[in-house]
Length: 111
Length: 112
Image (tube, rainbow over all chains, first blue to last red; front, side):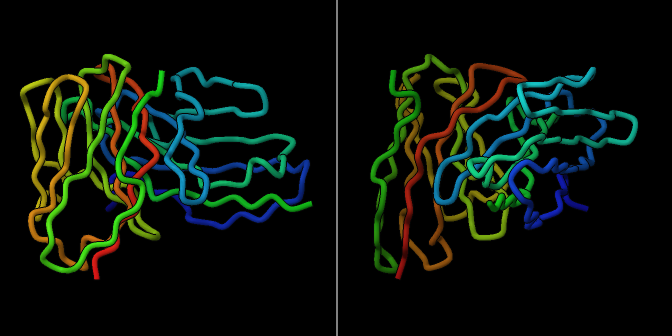
């Protein structure tokens, strides 16, 4: 089983749609969770951290379910500029400052 | 404040050639990392340096060596390049345990 699993997509949605991505992780001892965004041929950039109580940043909402070892990202009112690959990231509790990256979910927003 | 910088941006090598990828950060971060990213795959950790003076192997260290030259700089060396090392290489840094990582713009390496 992969340490961090994501649906690769692609998710093709029209502008204005709401879209949700899910991610599962295997190590129940993980404590830090993030969503990163990666544009084509560019470096990953932090989108948001994920907190136990859930958190929101504008149109983006992240949720964490520790019992099910599941993380989600909800994007409301999708924009063309949201088209990218979204990486689910979890810390490796056994490795100092190490993060484990999912392979990513690709989102394509069309007019 | 440039963040994380990498050189070169692009490189083409012939099999057996050697080269060093350079990485520097100006955020006073303690830990630095080298990853490779291949199409359809997640980022895979090659080597990391938890702090100045220490380096450790990651998931895919074979064929690579690293040097943590000082707190700012962390270089990755390919001693004898192979076609399987064709990839995009990213350097990253982080302040401390549980913190997010910041990435450089990447080096696109092709080995023929």
